[in-house]
Length: 408
Ligand code: GLY
Image (cartoon, rainbow, N blue to C red; front, top):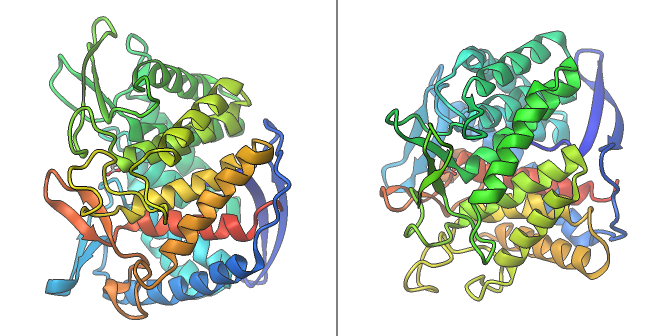
């Protein structure tokens, strides 16, 4: 979730007039002097408008009490989940971002409706995905309209998340497993933002310290010499030693699964923002260098689903990975100076330009109401392959907003 551009909004006259007070994070200095390109700002604005119209199509199709997952065009089938599935926060989160852009209350009302269904997950201790689920939804809702109700929900969610922390390993457990295994995936970096927020709100440093421990353990073990990341690490829960390094969603245990690299990039950018600790900035820079200097990164900067997939260039792209990278890079480019900043900004801008073409952005009324086409959930499991995905949409919309608001 985007807390780089911290805003508090005061709702006046039935949510119709907004007054924003924005400031950047207190922990870090923003360095960049780049001015966004007017043409791309306009492109972002047009695509945010289109996205809002698309989500109205999606909301019409959504069955009561269900959350969107993906859409299969050949069967005209909208696939949905219950609130417990890891993607449940992206739909309300995207609606809230689009509401902020358009002021359209239909989007806000739909976000409020679905968040009532989602709220019970604050007690879910069976998943590490609570940051995605509860912070991209209720975190954005609180940012727009700070209320005790949302605050309590997020703090309860943070409590549930830290119940999965093990001090012997120094990490939060990702997936449940056999007792002799302790699985941590790189994706888990994305759930830490909510813990920093919980400390900020409660003054209880437990959340902050757990987030830092998790990030440090991950930094120590999860990255290869070339700064790419493994997907899954299996720690010994008794000793905290790493017993396996492998993949679940990538091409192979030693390959660089594109979305995993994107989660790492975004996660360590978050860590730098929240702590001001330069070692996290350095880690984010190293990940960015791996991704964007990779010989298999295409000119248009929308990554193949795995950097080491055989038969590149004749393999699928992952629009979701590209969207996450663009959003993260726009933030990271503000924390570095000179050529580095420009390079990150240019790469993010290139991703936005590519994803905003008809190759990736769905024509109005198509794609089941999702915004982007061509993401890959899990190719090895033959699940959600070359389809729209809620998180592709969420981070694309976030990247468009970040581009528009860049430097402000
Ligand atoms: N967090 C699961 C995924 O990225 O597919």
